[in-house]
Each structure stands twice: as structure tokens, then as C-alpha cells.
Image (cartoon, rainbow, N blue to C red):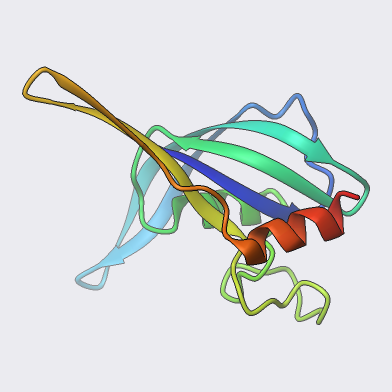
Length: 128
């Protein structure tokens, strides 16, 4: 799977892998599960970064949590956010499931979903 996202902050290009133990609660028990995501900075400026994200594990809210932990919340994410600054509140969370590839019965499948108009508008606004 490949995701595209716009986050707040200037993500360093040297950050290419996020590896964490994320906390979850299951039946009133706290669990820590390993989460690994590869990332690539596609564009960046002082305020925002446009990222390509490839989760190697599939934890609930994995991308949102990992980016938030590093101080780079996804624009429009009201749950994993550093503050209530109106500039980053957005009707749409700027996290897009861009592509998926898999093999079934020895046959390869590949699908892509192009960015919607709202995401494109924000991309043009933040990275003129």
C-alpha cells in the first residue's frame, strides 16, 4: 500500500523509516504493537511536507499516530493534532490511499486512485 499525505512541519529528508511500539487497548488491557512505515519526502517547505508513506505493518491509525509522535500531524486530522490552530483544521484529512499492489492466485494486481480535487487544491496552496 502507498499513501500520500500533507503534514504540518518540515519533515527532514533523512527520515525514511518510522519504527515504533504503538499502544492499544484491548479488553481493558494495554498492548504495545510494533509499527513500521517507510516514508519519502516528496516536497517540503518551512510549514508543510508532502509525503509518500508505505506501511509495512497494518496497525490501527498507524500513519496518523507515527507522524503525530514526531511532531508532524496530518493536515485535517482532528484526533492526532498538536493544537487547535484553525489553520490546520480542515474539513478533509489530507491522507490519501494512493495505490495498492497484491498477488492472488499467482496473478499480480495493481490499482491507483488519483488525488481528488480537494487534495490537489491544498497541494497547490501549500506548495506554490
